[in-house]
Each structure stands twice: as structure tokens, then as C-alpha cells.
Image 1 (cartoon, rainbow, N blue to C red):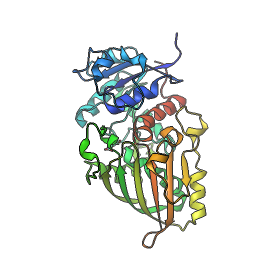
Image 2: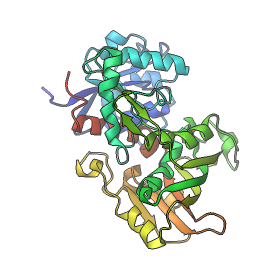
Image 3: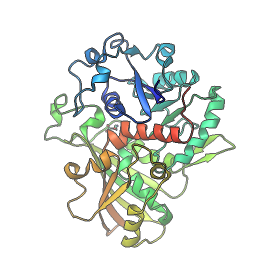
Image 4: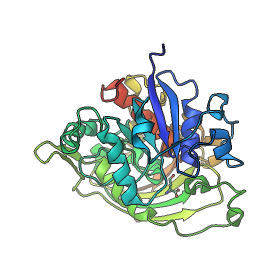
Length: 364
Ligand SMILES: N[C@@H](CC=O)C(=O)O
């Protein structure tokens, strides 16, 4: 009998769901046993349900091809054999909030890639290398939900992953005003060039809801658990972020160009030192998907580049370069992160690994 923790995927047929499937093949701790999607896919084998819509670079793993897809709405049926689920469901936000809570209330932890619960005050929104202590709020959430085991944990939006790690590494220098422009890959919208030909040779200067997420989510990540309130209180210091988010003709990899002011006056040597020597509990715990080195600093003038750097540390690391003084702000730099690995399914998988390592996810 397998000792691995059994996992299901809600929303298994979408692009993030497919990424979860590929990442869970031969996972050392987790065994993928259940796939769930909309009523339209339910009852079909995974291969039939996907049809011609497999969007990963590698072929569909053999072990999932004949799994019969369950209906996400049949909660009791989906949770029967699993210890926890990943959620990548595609529904209106209010419905996602409701169904993720329904799953949690069956004592099934939910690790979600969705934005629906990111601002629920007792739901931790964690980048394992930055704010794993926020998982402590789970005890308060469990009280609200009336569970002993079930809870919801989320990861932040992909767009913040290319610059928030640098802000975390530079916390002691008190980041203040930040102007960020993101150049976001089409896979962030669940698309490839085949299904979005309009993006070939094109730039679209609008991504719905993205600027608000880019500006506000880092403040929750840098917040703290208020034990009395039983919730995460967002950072209310001097950090202010403004952003523009642009869709660019790139398949994978969100780039961010950033201008930043600090409360203190760090030297370039100090800034680079804090990036390359950034350490975290995630790497110390030896999580299967935690990068050995979270942040790489690149000195060539033409890096980070999507083609050369997006797969750094298996797509789980963050690349920073072009750090230089600015004539209006203190410093400016460019960051790059893989949006569907570090920024989506990979980040959620690493979060689940951390939750398992910390004892929040166990066999039922
Ligand atoms: N909203 C993001 C999704 C992140 O992967 C985007 O559109 O790029």
C-alpha cells in the first residue's frame, strides 16, 4: 500500500490543471488519484475530456489518460479517496469561494491557485520562501469553518513573483515607493499562440484585474498574523506600489521592470548580497520543489531574458538583473519568473509541500 499522501485536482482540464498533472507525475510525497472538472468533462476519461486541448510541452502522462474525470460539484464523491486537493477551478469568484469552503468543510485541505479567497482575512496567501509563518492563521480559519483538519490556503498572483522576492530580500532597507511594469506571457491567460493568434507580433496593454493584484497582493504577503483578530493584517508601512500590466507575445515567463525608493540608503553591493544570499525555511526543509537558490542575480546587461532564464531552478527560481541607480528613483532593476511554474501550479505545489512538512497536510 502506498504511503504517499493522496491528492486530487479540481479543474484538472484547464491549463493550470494540466500543469498540476505534469508536476505530480512521480512526485515523491504526493500521489495523484482523482481528477475533477466541470459536468461537461465528468464521466469521460481524462484523455477524452482533454481532446485536442493538451497544452503542456511534454506528452500527457500515461497514468492519467484512463482516469475517469469526476464532477467538481459532487464534493462527497471527489473527496472520497483523497487527503487534500489542488484547486484550479474556473467559475465565477463567488462560486469558487463557496465550493472551496465546501471542500474544506469535508476535512479536505484545499491548496488553491485561484484568486477568489486571496482577500479572505483568515486565508493565508503564501510564497513559501517569503511568508510561511502566515500558515499559523489556519487554526483561526479552522475555528470559523468548524473543521479540525480542513482549510484553504492560496498562493498569490503570478504577476507579483518577478519582483516581490527582491522586495523581501531588501526588507531591511525599507522599500517605499515602487513603480512596476509587468510584461506578461500569454500562458498566464491560459493560452498558447495556437489558440490566441492575435498575440503573435502584438502587445495588448490591458489585463483585467491585474494591476490591482500587482499593487495590493505584496502588502498581504508582507503582512502579519494578528492572533487577537485571528486574521492576516496587510502591511501598513510606507511601501506603496503602482503598476501597469501588459500582455506580450511570449509563451511562458512574466518580466517586471521596477523603479524603487528605499527608506535607507543601501549600496549596490549590499543589494546584490541580500539577493544572492537569500535563505528561507523552504530550502532548509528540502521541499521537493523548492529551488536550491531562490534568487539568481545576473550581471550581463541583456539578462534576465525569457529564453535563457525562465527555466532557472526548474522554473521555480527568480532571476534579477540590470540593477542600477536611477536619476529620479533610488534604484531600478528587471525581474523574471516562470508564470505557470513559480507563479501558478509550481508555487501551489511547493506550498502544499511546505504545508505537509509543517504538519498541516497529513493522511486523513
Ligand atoms: N492573471 C495572470 C495569471 C497568472 O498566471 C495573467 O493573466 O497573466
